[in-house]
Image (cartoon, rainbow, N blue to C red; front, side, top):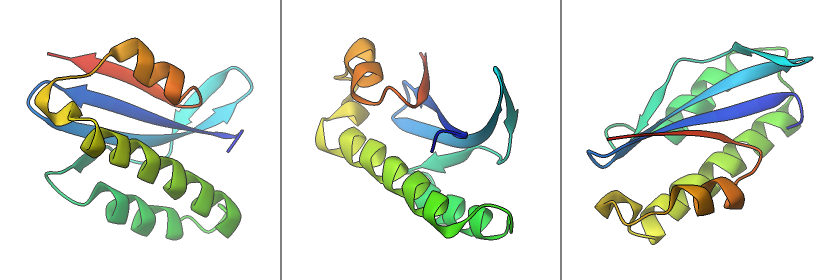
Length: 103
C-alpha cells in the first residue's frame, strides 16, 4: 500500500467518509470519490470502484480493503460513533491513513 493513501473524514454526526489517493513522489492524486459509512456500504462501494480500475493489482486491492475493514471495525468497536474517540490515538493506530475530524 506504499503507493496508495486512504483518507478519512470523521463527522460528528456519527458517520465517516473514505476515499483513496495515489501517491506520486510527495503529492497525492485522488483515485476515488468519498464513500460513506454507515450511510451506505463504503467497503462494498470501494471494492466495486477499485475493481473497475484495471491497473490496480488484486494484491493492492486486498490490502486497501483490509485496511478499510480495520478502520471501520475500530469505528464500530470503540463507540467512535458515539463521539467517544481520541483523534491522536486513531492517527497513531492507523499511521498509513490520513484523517480529518469535523464537528
